[in-house]
Amino acid sequence: MMDQEAVSMLQLVKEPIGIVAVCGRARQGKSFILNQDFYRDLSEDSGRITPCDYLELALKPDDDRKRDVVAKNEIRASILAVFPDRECFTLVRPLNNEHDLQRLDEIQLDKLRHEFRSGLDTLTRSVFERARPKQVGATMMTGPVLVGITHSYLNALNKGAVPTISSS
Image 1 (tube, rainbow, N blue to C red):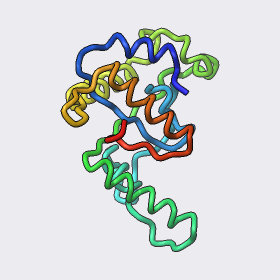
Image 2: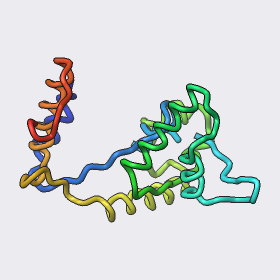
Image 3: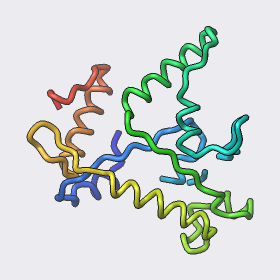
């Protein structure tokens, strides 16, 4: 079902909009960027690597033929196919205090670590520079159009059907 508060907000957006997808493993921090980031040491045997190098290494298929690895390789291949233009950003912990991290959604942005805010600014700037208005057929995507398409998709899914863009 659709969140009514989000629907109300989207109904007000009459200008063209772009769609941004944030993806990643479950429970690994998408909500903060949209709640709270995971910890990786960006290094390999050859030394330090960039965030983009890390992403590309993570998307390389594994040679193991175990069932779970084959399934993960299929996911990796799907990500590579669906997202031919990829970039990876890393952010430091927004706060050092564990108690404050538990209530991160209540903390004002200016109270977060400078390094975190700087990284978040870089990420946000990149998203806005790259995002382009979405067009479906001859129709430019606006908030009300997105609400309508989402509503059609949810109706189809709730009835056990597979939604298609052309019928939505």
